[in-house]
Length: 392
Image 1 (tube, rainbow, N blue to C red):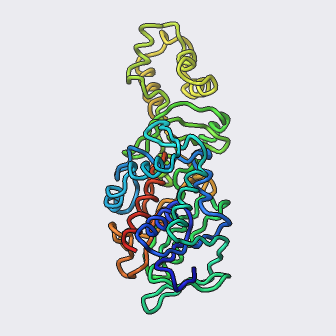
Image 2 (image 1 turned 30 degrees about the vertical axis):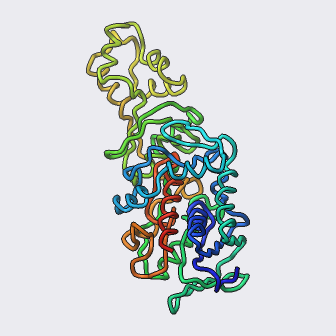
């Protein structure tokens, strides 16, 4: 395909770009997909431990973060998890539901990539990899993209290059530079779904590296109940990754280490097992190393019978809301996704087209819509890619 034959040029052969290209092809559009990496779908391939958590059946707009919380509603309502699941089943890809609505391939993430790539190629689209973009221009209603292989032109240009999370995979902030070139505002990008780091007095918890337990993590009014994990740098695990997307520097993260215990449980334990100790009670409920550390921090020595109710209630309250003040995150290098991006105020929520630049689209992680952990970001890639494809 030469540039002049294309109806649309899509920059980025990740989840959103591939979906958009395949769906546009089904509508008879001739699509050219330009990818910087040596092969398409690299981030898909490493997702879900190599099995691709390709959607979440519990997808809903309130599970996405954006400066405009209503923006995602249109695309998500018009292209649902069931719609993508139909593609998967039509392809004969075996899948299973893990936990919390997360759907995975039984086999390999490669099956999802192959399905999408075949969808592009079989509808006449072209994928060019190893493309280094030297420039993007716009004149007379046409976009011109120049790479080392030449110049390509089309009346539509789709930005699907993602954000800077996982730079070792080749991720960059190119989408933002291009958006600014066309006068579009960008919401400051930041790492999301990322481990938090600890310093100060909390640094002692790093000694628990490798210890995991079910917790409720909270910041502000947001809370997640899943596994928490101590690392050599701080806190991780699904509950922490989830809360990291809402956390801001200087804020506390409260951790409930015993989410199934009622507020007065320690006083009740004193009545029923007066000779028990704080350490023994915690060891019954938590991993040994964590139980010992928390008991030492609470500094309640001896049998419960000898401890005042007020101190026991205070300890129970601390265990249900142990305050950590992270000193940062592990950054884009360890972030699963990027929050922020091309401002949704610049785009149509129905078509993903830039309001002030006809023919220019932004989809997927490149724009300011970020989902929860567990297949939500893939569903946004499918839905936003589909929405743009309906308009190209």
